[in-house]
Image (cartoon, rainbow, N blue to C red; front, top):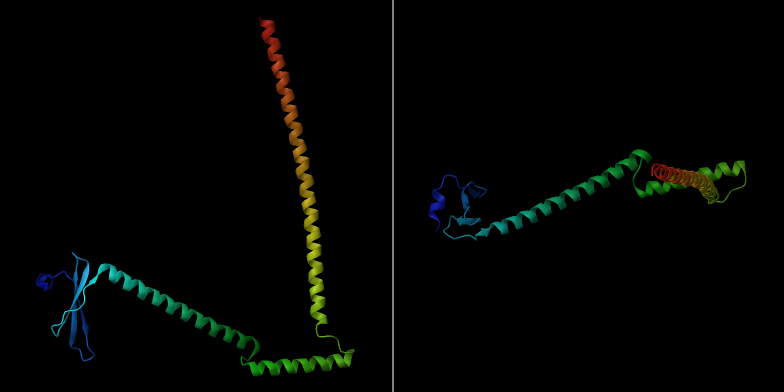
Length: 187
């Protein structure tokens, strides 16, 4: 149907090949219309794709590639997390984790039984929380003190600026009075 397109040496042709190497179909780019024409070798005519259709298909393929890359990144991150856990603790499976927790619990109970009566499991975390709250209160007090110092410094600077402004006004007033007296003397 478009014999002139096939005769052009600069028109790109794309051929799809079967697994045995035989040519299946040929695609020709029509730069005037911005379409791709596909002719199958069996004599059937393929669908013409406009430039917009090709851009749309390309954007879909791009999205698929981005999604694939994100999935690969997530899977790598999961694998790395498991590798880090195994490197840190020496095991990954939940059964081994529970066994290690039970072992540690039994060892802690045995050492506490020898030293002193058994303490509440939550006592140490609560003490840590109390320490954290106390540290927060101290930080709050220090910030309030600093805020008060800055406020006093600011009010002092403001008073000094107001005094300088009043002195400047008084100086301008005296200068105006002197200028007025000099003008009167000249007249």
